[in-house]
Image 1 (cartoon, rainbow over the protein chains, first blue to last red):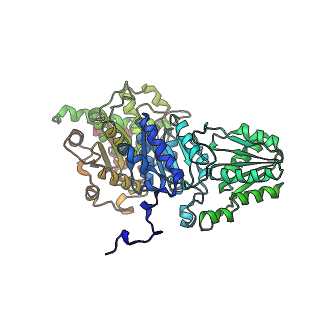
Image 2: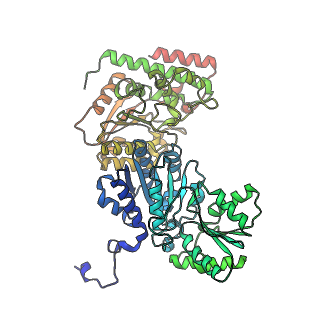
Image 3: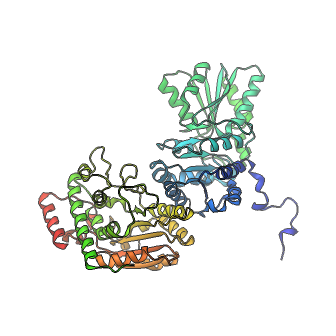
Length: 326
Length: 280
């Protein structure tokens, strides 16, 4: 009978590579810190604690960790019941299963009663590349932001995730957090500030302003800095809160720029691009807008980095799309 | 457990009659409603609210109150009058049932109805909600119990069995389900549509303590519910399968499937009221 000890270097199993999503450590660690500080946090997952880092919360607060097994709908509805009794549940699973499979439970048992449940949809967008369409979530922003009373937050990196969790811990209503796969390069320093509903202007630009959210903030930043280094006056507005939406900063960017370009790891229908279009149209701003993201189709399968290149969502791709507009 | 006296049973019988009368009155305001669904659980609701549940109507947010979740929320028309009767809100407010801006819709809304522990209306959710409340209660060492009234048609929903499996696994002994086994859903007989039997064995297989009762016999219902609620030795969640008749109390509703939803004009309403009063 063979044992793992016989395996060669390079072979691995799930529990031997827990560091492959370091950006998600911020989830379990921050929640455990907040629980240490006395916040009534309950962490819930559906058989994915190693994927979302909640195993790190479980180690520190086993009595406040709930393993629901592979029953996401039961978990989301139960979190409403838990929240109605005064606790603050953080419910984490893949974004595809949370926002799509549990859409009705989120609407009826979390958002409609206005309970302080935090829905953590991780590996959003096409982060699970070759796992296929069942595991892609390119519709979640559109769905979640149309549910009344539900805030929608998409942090750019681990530091902003930690800041957002901390800043919203006492928020009285429900929040959907859209996270990537935990390998997003750092944009912000630890201790960065997050204010629910506020966008962050990195650069102002008269020719074009790129508007990015979540996982596209880092590549957009790289693209904008490359364009600026070539003397082009391109700005960047990062939008970590999709709802409530920072109408004022988007309009300010539109007034100061000849054109806007939204960039998101999401269908071009209904997400960040849709939110910006609504603001521009309703304000009567004539600024042309280009919505860049996943076309309105089911994605190819492939390794995530290959997909980002294919869909021009990496730094080079975003730079090329922006260059075409200049 | 205290013995069920004739006076106890008579009180439940009388309150069940009140529930049926009020159901008919409120549906006359809405001009459409779920008579039959409310009638099948009238004795069950009366036994819970007038005997079993630990409540403080003057302090609706009391953290240690027993919770009640109405999975089959479409029968709320028979439940609002109880809350008014117990003093959660003025009885006159019911006169605007379902009218524009009323807190009282066909399904219960926790943000609008004082005394409502959780909104419902989408079938299959309430056992999960109750499980969450039961978990929270154990986490904080509170001794409240969570009662969840389910329709038998509702048991077709898959989420019920997710919750049942999880509650059994967690030994959620503070969670008590009551199945209003009236054997009918909208399109026909529940078991013709998708069979539920052997229902008791199914719950047992999921780790629940199961008992059954004639859901229209006030003495039996009281004895069963008190026995389950006060059993401090029980380590498993409990389910009471209450055998009932959809439309109980009005002859033609008991025998015709269509009365899941309906409306009676005034002379028919009077006849239904006479039957309901005669049955009590």
